[in-house]
Image (tube, rainbow, N blue to C red):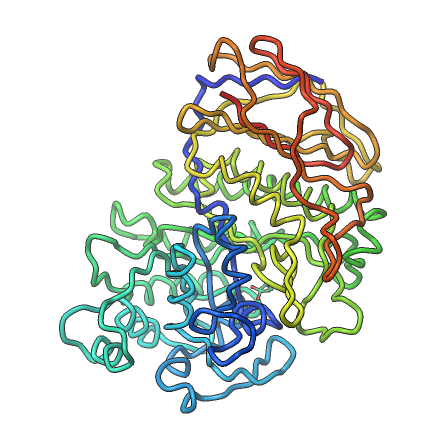
Length: 502
Ligand code: AHR
């Protein structure tokens, strides 16, 4: 099998936000997973656990979306500010019916972003909120001068405004966000976004319009774009900067997703086939966006993606806690390659979710923490962030897997940044090693591999368990032979590899 790379053919800028994360008030995602409170015995900084912070810093989180998800459309931000003992408690109706004490609110979230050095993506409440509530939230966070919300922020101890990069008007409003019809949502979107003011005119907030879930392109994308662009002033690009897309991998089906560990191997090709389906969805949405926005002003934001399995036995079904195996590493590898390849339109993606929920990068149990296989893939892909995607194509990349769930044997993407070429390659074969000949044109006369890493494990179902040595980690990879501008690589079965060339 051959892979051709032409470093002179630049195909777009890989926005670092493609490597973004999502964290919702769901299960142990925020509480326990990130926020333990200042009085906890678990070492923390302003209530945020240090072990998780350190791990997340290692993968350089570029942007974090919060507070939901479905939770966002029932979240009233004013309940989460001011003295903690006075904050209102609520029932988290979406996720397990547990009490939400609002001890993690706007100040705590933005402190987390500061500690991570990442951008803030706030998801507003359209379902049970109002234009006023969202408008005041923006004023509270970013307001300058004298105004009621700015004064309130100052009274709560924060003098300086925060920088908010992204604000979404609702979440999945075709479903948990209100079961709205597309035209109705579009009208509410147009209305609400008007009142999201830019107090910091140098850093305008990017406004995010809710897009479709899997299979909803016809029903939602078409109609929302049509209504947002209808009679819209020229240059307003439908009043939006970003349009979202959600896609989860339910390996078997919604009612029986399969076990995260026990079914990792038998649902392998099904899972990877469904992960790769994101490319179809991206292309369909790209085509519709092109019709309205040929200049490419609107970014596509895949702000929920990942594998979703049956919850771990013995845990709260509403908490969506699952383990993570080599299958997840491959889901991450193929998805990130696809996002890279579509970086002209895909300008943000947020894996669901960062800690303890669905395809997490970090799992915690009391004071213990493990990094998942997905964590190591994010770490290996760091070199792509802010790079220029370069042309890459295969010769002879046969499809494998059962009839209904075919996938190409290998997935790859390549980018150039600061004189180095980052190449990521995944071998989707369950059980066969692949010999890959790589030719790199228009880069350097004599190639040098300055770094080689691999995420692999003896068994597909291997995972990193608490109190045990990690089985699925990033290791050095040396199984390559250099020959001028060519490189011969042996890719072990079910592996994700990164090569940095100079
Ligand atoms: O990530 C879990 C849930 O999946 C989110 O709350 C919702 O937006 C989606 O349906």
